[in-house]
Image (cartoon, rainbow, N blue to C red; front, side, top):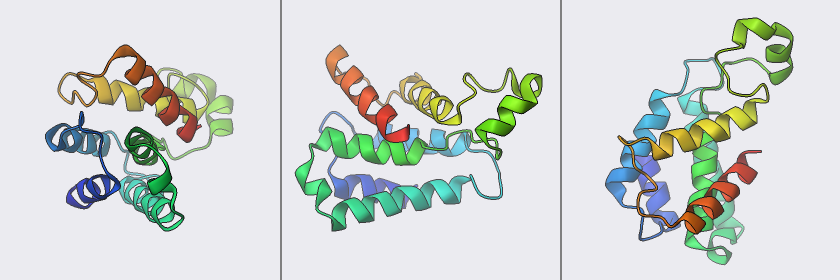
Amino acid sequence: CHLLLEIFSRAGLPPEIDSARLKRFILAVREHMYDNPYHNWTHVFDVTQTTYAFARRAGTLARISEWDRFALLAAALCHDLEHPGVSSPFIAKAGAVFSGAFKDVLLEKHHALRAFEVMVDRDVGLLEGLSTAQYYNFRKTVTDCIL
């Protein structure tokens, strides 16, 4: 959690996002990750750190807004949220076995949907205080990055 807080901090957080809420968000994402051989917390950390490193090295972080930087890293953190360890085609073929477990057969849509359910959870409150326009702009950017 501390290394991810450092990554988000170095990227430059929007002033509306305080570190306590960010920490609650990171810990909540970790709690929602399944213990799969590949799509697990280690993978999520690796993808988030790699996204940060590539975006920094390429100069992307310097060229985009702090909200877009935050959206990019939040998407990296949530890109496999609650991944069951099987592919979308497998889930589609399995049908009823997974029917209640995922809100959409396409895993990426599930990851994006669950990311925002975690963000707005009252125990996390990551996006408290955002205007409606800020929220929907941020949501679109994160969802686009995950998809």
